Amino acid sequence: MKATLIISVYKNTTALKAILESLKRQTEQDFEVIISEDGQDAGMAAFVQSYHFPWPMQHLTQEDLGWRKERILNQAVMAAKTDWLVFIDGDCVLHPRFMEYHIRYQQRGIMLAGKRIKLSPELSERYLKGEKIHFFPYLFFHRGCRFVEEAFFCRWAEYFRRPVKHLVGSNMSMSRTDLIAINGFDENYVRPATGEDYDIEWRLQAIGCKIVSLRNLAVQYHLYHKENWQDHDENSVYCRQMQEQNQYICKNGIQKL
Image 1 (cartoon, one colour):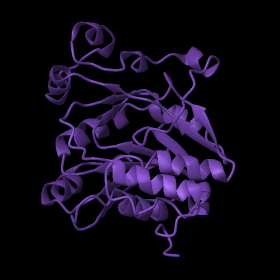
Image 2 (spheres, helix red, strand yellow; image 1 turned 60 degrees about the vertical axis):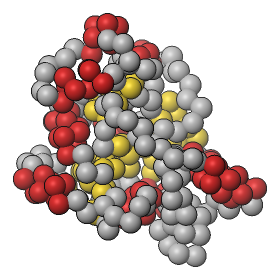
Image 3 (spheres, one colour; image 1 turned 90 degrees about the vertical axis):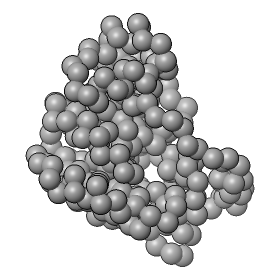
């Protein structure tokens, strides 16, 4: 296998099914799948057990005790059977060439970074109902879609890269070896955002890793849902403290230092 796709999920089996169906259309199929579930939902367990996975698959769960995404991600990192890890969220449908480009440019010492378009509520609902929607024309006529410029695959983007300033946790990949070198994800993050992308970014940069853009190559469609984020000041303060201390090897990660 060339890579491991880690899908972070929480209860939403409808969206997960849409993601898995998009995986079946991938131009590159030599990968394994890890369902990384921050919780132990009976509906999710039943769905995973009944779904026919064409790829090697693992389903990792943990008790639902609040936001502990980083903890289950560390378990997924250690369970992976390949060195190249691709991370997505359980509400992001993939363009057919998504895995191809995350695999094509894999290399120790780099982080591959894509973006995502946020679909409108109407377009998301129609897609989840099974309608065959050609995203290109619909995006211009449905109000509510955001970051439309990220929706279009263009092979010329290989040669004229649109830069990426920061990692997005739902569309990134990196070497397992590099990730283990910084002790994985920092489990001290107990709120959404920062912990699974920006924190990983600066810590990997501290050991010499560089960001390589996959904008308009690894295209991803984010299904609409209401945001349930809370105040992130706690995350931001903690992150700044770790940066000031140059603590790029986290203490509460894969290993408890």
